[in-house]
Image 1 (tube, rainbow, N blue to C red):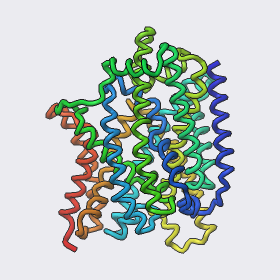
Image 2: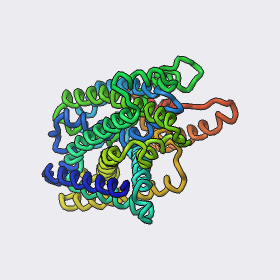
Image 3: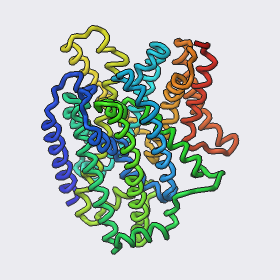
Image 4: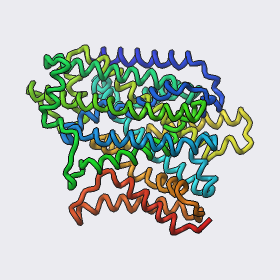
Length: 481
């Protein structure tokens, strides 16, 4: 029964997505693929970006995090909103003034070609690993719930999902994604609301009773004022703000959709509305987590050690009823695809614009299109390889893994951008790649050795430490303009 429902939901959703993408009627040229001809409605972009940013990780990993961290994740979400305000009024004006397709082209004008390539390459590494981790989690859930029972291997699940993403993105790119992401966000939020209703119905809870359960639960704590804790409010707020600036403001994936808005004013409204919506959406996920753990405890269901397994386990074993399986499958599929499709498109854009320079090398339209198709297919294969590595190595709690990877890989980009924005100094461009690599390796060693030598555990402030190392290293390697 579960197999049939999962396959039906998956087939229904993919067909709906292809129909929606086909109706968009993209021209399919590079201007549509990279920039959506700069005609996207800002409200549509804002709504679609919710699904791109939270992905299947939020639907599965955030509720699973509650048992360990309570609802203190909301502290980071408050920091997220502050970060979106910084992006809207500091970074977006720069990007629109320079009319950028790839935001890393700014660094070519500010510092030089090697700085430009350094940021682009670190973005490729960051986005490829982060998006692959998100997609890996979703593919694992789909595989365990239905496909594995048919005797099919994990790579079959990966292949089906990646082929679906490739075929509905390779033609229209960003122009299609702006619209399909809105559909996917709607499906994901509707599924989350339905799952919350399902578990509350099993517990015979009214809306007001749900609030009582959250308040009375030891997992309902939202704020931590213990300055020595990794969950301390100020620590989490600052981490959240800089994670947002790094993973959104200097991320080609998220900014590419913002830059499809027709004006700076529209893009700023999009960013502020999107940032505000992140708070209630994550509050819904956290509330769902408290309900799931409470329900499992009351029902005598063994709670899995891995928090990411809680919701899939309860849905898969039928504890929440068969009616929940269909929306759950659509929700995680929508969340995964909305994150992975935009990541695949932005990686293709960055490689074509930043590295291959298809818009600056005198490429004719046919050659540029062939190059783009080849790069897009190569990116899809790279996704498959990264997911295979996650599958072999194991990944722990995925949301924690993503934020830690961001500290290692986004830090140098953040440091280079801030140095360009807040100083007028000229750097020695040829040394920038070596400095970025040194900063990341230093942070990896710091994260590994500090708990051993000093019994101190870093949280996500490694991102800020990495950026600071890069910033001050650039100061040392620069001169007055």
